[in-house]
Structure formats: C-alpha cells, structure tokens
Amino acid sequence: MELTPIYRCVAALDVHQAKLTACVIYEDEQGEVQHQLREFGGFKRDRREMAEWVSSFQPEQVVMESTGIYWKSPYAALEKSGIRALVVNARHVKQVPGRKTDIGDALWLATLSRSGLLRGGFVPPENFRGLRLISRQMQKLTGILSGEKNRMHKVLTDGGIRLSVVVSDIHGKSARAMIKGLLAGETPEQVLRYASKRLKATEEELLDALNGDLTDDHRFVISEILAHIEELENRIHCFADQLLNRLAPQRSILRCLQTIPGIDEIGAAMLLVEIGEDMDAFGSASNIASWAGVCPGNHESAGKRVKSKKRKGNPYVRRILCEAANAASRTRCALQEKFKSLIVRRGRKRAIFALAHKMLKIIFVLIKRGDYYRDATINYEAISVERNAPRWIKMLKKYGYITA
Image 1 (tube, rainbow, N blue to C red):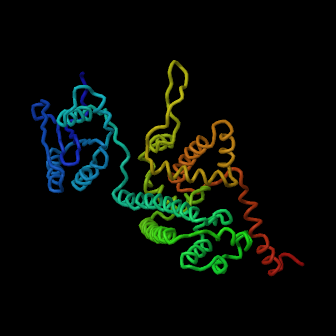
Image 2 (image 1 turned 30 degrees about the vertical axis):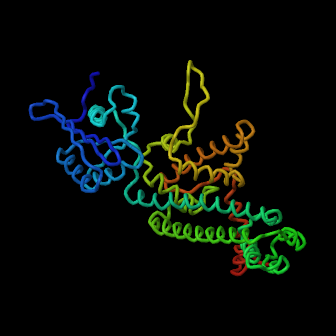
Image 3 (image 1 turned 45 degrees about the vertical axis):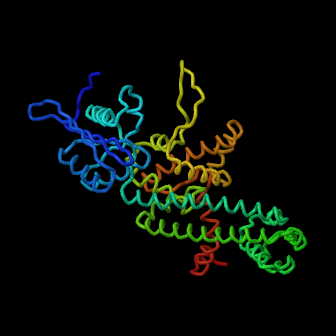
C-alpha cells in the first residue's frame, strides 16, 4: 500500500511494562527514506535515554499507543524533553494483519504517522493529570465506603435491629449515636436520648426498631465496620480538601458548573480534572460526548439505524455525569422535563444516560464561554424580586420614596 508522506521525520513508540520499542523514520540529505529501530527498558534511566534518543532526531511528530497505564511514564519523559507526543488508539495496529511483533508495531505506527493518518487522544496538562490521581482515588474510596455501609446494614438486620425501617439514613448523626450506644451495652430505652427531635418516628417505633438480639459477635463485627467507615469518611474528606485547594485558581469555573442542577462542588471539581479547562482540545460538544462515551451508538445499515451499544469512553466522567443526572431528574428545572419526556418511551436507565449526554454538552458550553447556567423554565427575575422585595420596600420607606 502506497502512503503519501507528509512529515519529514516522525517517531513512534510501542509501549510495554518493561520494554519500549522506538522507531524513527526520516529522510536523509539525499532524500532517501531511512528508519532506525531501538529497544529500551522500562525504568527511569531507560525512559530518559529513550527521550534523549528520540529528541536527537528532532521529529515533527511522535506517536505512542495508549496501552493501559504504561504510556504515562514514557509520555512524561518525552514531555520533559519538550516533546508533546500523540497518544493513539491501539486498534490502528491490531487491525493490520501480519504485524504482530513489537518492532512491526512501532514501524507501522511510524509509517501511519508520517502520512498523517493518526489522531491523538485527549491528554490533560501535567497539573490536571496529577489531580486525576486524587479524584479517582477519592471515587474508589467512596465506592468502598458504600459497600461498608451496606454491609453494616446487613449485620444490624441479622442482629434484629430494624433501625432502617423508621430512620431514613442509619448513618446520620442520631442513628449512628444510637448504634454506638447499643454497642457500648446500653439498653434501647437509654439510647433514646441520642435521638434527634427532628426524627418523624415516635419513641415507641424507635424502641421497637432498637430492640434486637445483638450477640458479642454482632457487636464485634459492627464495631470494626463502623471504625472502618469513620476512617474512610475522614480519608475522603482529606482527599476532597486537597482537590479543592489545588483547584483554587479554577474557582470561577467551579462556581459556573455548580449552577447546573445536580452538580455540587466536589462533582464539579472531579469533572474539571477529567475534562480540563481548555475545550478547544475537543473542538465541539459532540466530540467531548463521544470521548466520554455518553453519546448514542452509531450503527447504520442499508439506510436504517440499527440498535447499538454505547461507546467506550472515560468511565470516571460517565459515572459522575450519571450521578449528577440522577440528582437533576429530581429538581424543578428543564432537565427534569427532559427526563420525564424520555422515561416514558425509553425507560429510566436510558433516560438518565441521555440526560448525562445533555448535561455534558451544557458543561462544554459553560466552560468555553466562562458563563453560568440559565434554566429555561425558571424566572430568575421573579425569584430575585420575591427574595429582595421586603428589603427594597423597607429602604424606600426609610428614605422617603414611599410614604406609609
């Protein structure tokens, strides 16, 4: 296959855990095409040596496969040498028959790159890549916390405690205090003093729910789970503080994102570190939706749209958006109207997914314009008047503009 070259010198890397295969294709002084292949190890000194060797050719473009997480360290080494590499999809190599060696992969990547046939994926700046570690670990800890809370609920139920029947959240302040009282050996009548007056349940209902058959084994397991839950809550709080402090320069963007129903401060921060603040990297709202994997599947045959699966994308962005869409569906806004119109025809899960798609497009526009969200169904002027009218009237009377 004849490929028309566009670049004079390109480099490509085939990345593995313990080995890097580099290929450089260039034109010599006589205009003849030459290529050099070299293999490096996977340690820091090897990555530094690889970056120096690649930069010595002064390539116009450097490409590498997005192989798991192994591409990140070589990418950082090239970035320190002043080279911004393109991270491309590995299917460019996998779909070519007969090229199943590391050297063949690197050579084929370099050949495609020289002809301008590769497009790099989105790689955020270095500071956002570091914040991604904090955000993603916080999401992992949140998942572990949810599992521990569910496990504690099961153990309490096994011990005959039915507190979840009369209390909306057994991990609220009052419920947790009552559980700790039971673990300390207090009777149900004694732990009632920890119950908040805001609880809707009566004292009789609370006594019935707290009157169980907790054994020593139940108390031991619940105590350990409760200690683990509190430890996880403290760690998540530390991660959240660190994330928000590091995003202090982007506080204006975070405030804009929080105007969208369903998105709080932490959700806005986790979204920002995943998609970045430069929307020109994506080009359009449709492109970022495709990258995140929240756009509809695209499969057309014989002029007919065929049902297809959703695209693979960034799972962290998809999870945050679906949680925000679930929250927005319960608010009084245009997003809720969109959800209601879809749930009848498509079902709840598809409606939430479609709402996440719409919210990501809104986020793209807000970050690009540096603007806040305005809901089409809310009269902001009426809300402002309702909130401030008593104060305005009082001041007008005070200064004589209105006579009583």
